[in-house]
Image (cartoon, rainbow, N blue to C red; front, side, top):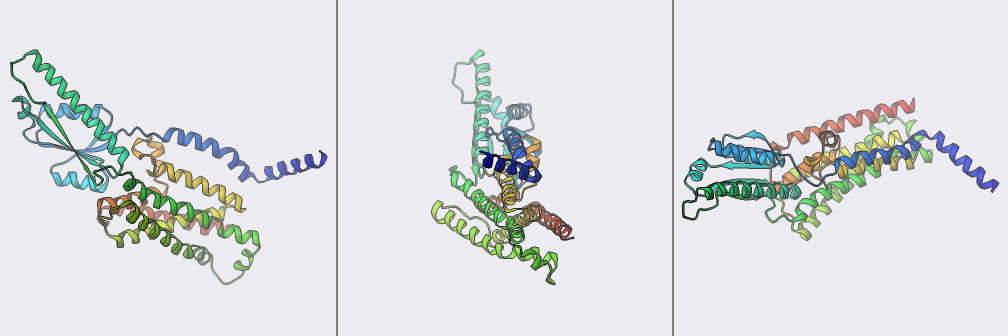
Length: 374
């Protein structure tokens, strides 16, 4: 028992000295429980919506107020023509487009069915399902209200339903889950493997005693860090290609956009993931610390990026945290090119975000590494 006690004392002393690992052991479960407990919500509400109201009457305003009052739609944009609706849904600014025809009020007054077109971005199947269900429910409710009013002054002849909500799911009409999940899985695989691999790179050199040999060579700091990244870029391309081929031939994934553009922008995401792994490798002292810090990046990337849970369902604070993760922007790129077929003109924001992330993270890594050498 004495030897066992001595070993336990030694382990606790060593744990106390390694403050980073001890802090991560205690803090990570608490942070993640609070973070994901608030952020994960499969009931998607407050979907950004664009409206093209050609009627501009009281009846159309009442319908829009009812849709917004359901809390599933946030009317953020007013379109002047159908092309503006199309561009907003294509670019991802709006998840839902509502088009009200010019004869909407006239049809209601004369007892005819008044049609309303609801365009839903079905590349995100969870958000699309919520939007479709809410739109249909609002249409049925409004129809029942008008029918009840007509029954009170019954005229003796049957009438058509006042509202005809016509749903037009775009990009994934059959709501195939694989079309939504496969692009996300591709990005998640790249994040998990590339961050994990590179996070061990410098730590492994330090533990083996070979880092000092690299430092005394004429190689500059940035050359050393870039040299750790470049081999894994090819690994990332191989993984992306294999995942894409599986998606196409196994899941019949439609690739509606440019493959050349997809591969070009994938390179940005690969470098961003590797840069994040290098930063972890510079900050960590041991491979165990590097692994723990990698999981601290990987799990939020899966849950806050929009891969598993729609970001529209998250509170504003947790949704903002997702913008600190490269996977958030890469998923928008993947689903935009593969499912929507959009071009670079609608992806400049994501490209800029990934480029800025790479520049900032690599700059921090170089400065931290120089400080450790000094």
